[in-house]
Length: 235
Image 1 (tube, rainbow, N blue to C red):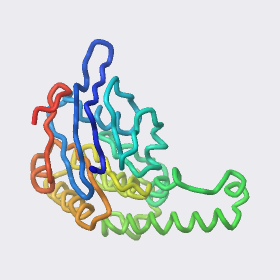
Image 2: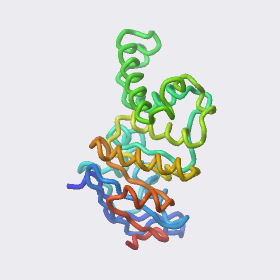
Image 3: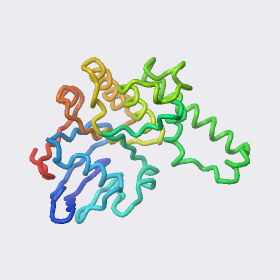
Image 4: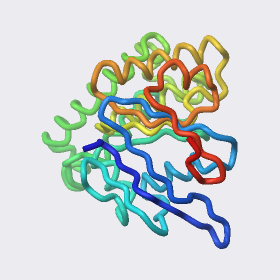
C-alpha cells in the first residue's frame, strides 16, 4: 500500500474545472515531483491534500485513512505538513520561535497548564525547543547557532525558505508537501536546497511530494515525475 494515494479526484470552481480525474500514488521514502505550467493545478492539488479544498469526487488516503472532510489541523496531526509558494513566516518572531510553532498542533498541555506554566508545560516546551534546534541544525550554519534568536525578518529570502521547511519538519510530519522550495534562489542556493531535500529522503525519515519549476531540482532528486496541464495528469 502506498503511503499516499490520490484516487480520481476532481474539483471545479464554478464552471472552471481546476482538477480533473487526478490519480497519484506516493510510496514511503520517495520524492515525487509535480510539474506543469502556471495554472496547471499543482498548488490546488496541495490545497486539496491539506483540507483547504474538498474535491467534488474521488478520495485521498494517507496510510490507508481517507482525508476527505478532515480539517487542515487534523491532517497535520496525522503526519502531513506543507510549505507554501508564497512565504508564510512570522517575521517579527525569532528564528527559533518560528520553528517551534510547528510543534504546537501536537501538544498535550491544556490551557491551564500553559497559563500557569506548570511542570508538564515546562517539560513539553523544553522538548519542543530541543526538536526545533535539532531541525534548525539540519540546515547547518544557514540557520544554526547565532541566528536562533534573530527575528525572521533579518533572514535572507533563501533562509526564510529553509526556515519554512524546518518548521514543517517540527510538526512531526512524515510526508512533506513542498511548494516551490527553490523559488527565488540563485543557482548556488538552489543546488544547496536540492541536496538537503534529497538528504531528507535518503535518511529515511521523510516522504516528499514536490512542486517545482526548476527542472535542475526536479531532475536531480525526483524518483518519479507527474506532469499536469489544465488540471489533468498528462504524464
